Length: 379
Image 1 (spheres, helix red, strand yellow):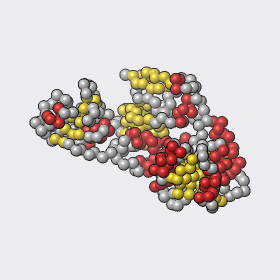
Image 2 (spheres, one colour):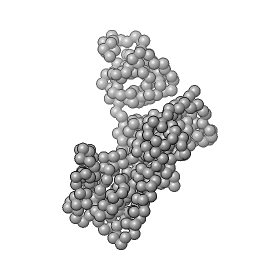
Image 3 (cartoon, one colour):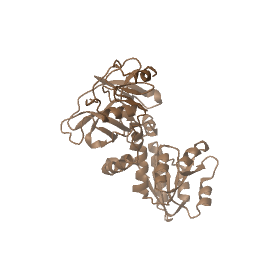
């Protein structure tokens, strides 16, 4: 059996990405094979493709910084996970694929009632934001902060988490993104038409407690200007090695000045390589903030075991949590696709009609009761 992955074959534009076929092998000792359900796509992947990222593997390689998946098979000596477990991982690479092989030490459990597409956003962007807020800055209620690149992935995560922490936040973004910044609890500043330093000094004469800067360059110096004495600038997210090195040197120069202001560079990958446990502690807290998918079933018939759900993911949840007619549902049994019918995410014996997402027990050929026939015929 084979599976597909996307490989960076050389440095360059998206055209260097190639789909390749791989042989699906058995996992080695203490290794697990994971069927990927979701993977993130972000600026770091682009930086890797152009050869700018210091933690990228040697080309050719499969990009993909984070994954959510289901364990398909486990190797000998594996004890923390089992086949069928929903897991997540900060992979740095390897996520652009249908399957991935990882050590169980790299995995954290993901509750089955959470949407993989929402969990994937937590693994890199939101954990980066969370760790900068609580491990690097150690924010507290009422702190005043500036977030550059506030409408981006990490920037919007900082706004959302900062709003929960009841911070007073200013967000730097283009005017067309101001609605996003406002909606996430920040006060927007237009980096094109407004003087950042003047706006902040007019609004906060005593200065800010923290600046979270993911842009670099001139914004490092501007960020220091708007800090109060005792304030800190947290730098993160440079897309390339040279900008990162220059930014780090500039940050250190400003940090040693006798102005009682400090600066610190944050890199989640370096922290993760050094000690994984803080990452696992923080992602578990973030997972608790996600709302589980609600199984709202507006139509059901016990005679035919028909359920109307709102999405493919709810379909997958439904067949994992319900025993129909006293029969246990096998979540891994294969099923062939027919006209207007698609297999659920978990490839179980329950199938659904695409479009209306009606979940049907066993097969479409089943004889339905008189109450359900009009409903089915109208789908």
